[in-house]
View: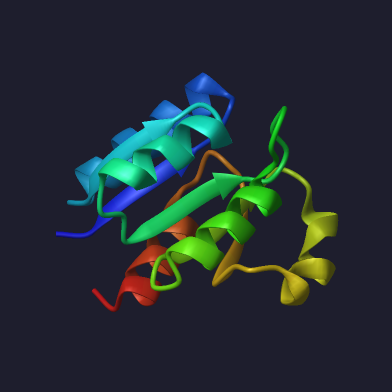
Length: 117
């Protein structure tokens, strides 16, 4: 079973994503900050990181860069509410980019494709 780490400072959205992915059969851990996510990576084997881009302190792009350097096999999906980031995605250390919405079908499809499930 794939283990996914969801990182988002918006509690309601993070918990909604976690619940949906757990219902889809994934083992999901959540963190409200990049700092907490880095701590989790030291203790857990994570297959996929789904992180919000806009967060206080360390943003999702910085987190993705750190994870890519230290845990190169981990897949990364960047989540954001702002579609204008899409044109810049090619230069980021990520496997996919998803605009956040309440319909999580796209996210679940991308996760299944990335993890080859």
